[in-house]
Length: 116
Image (cartoon, rainbow, N blue to C red; front, side, top):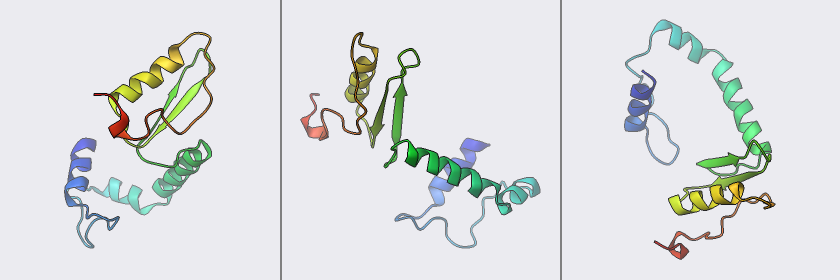
């Protein structure tokens, strides 16, 4: 049901942050879902997640934080990430004796600079 709802939202959402047209409602809503949406709970959870992301340095979507649980090192990748850049970031974390400084930039900031 979740993915059907997501597909419907993407199909009906207007661009430039305009959201759904006024009055348009998801056809799969039931009273329990409507009650949940009418409460403050979803907004409270979303705000808490947004604040946590901001505190963690996230400034763009999509963002991906790679975290090595053994060394506690992490790399934050922001924006669309090419596969090669993702693999390089994983290699950096996996490398022994490496100290990774927190950064929001990848070595190839411009996709055109990346080898294909």
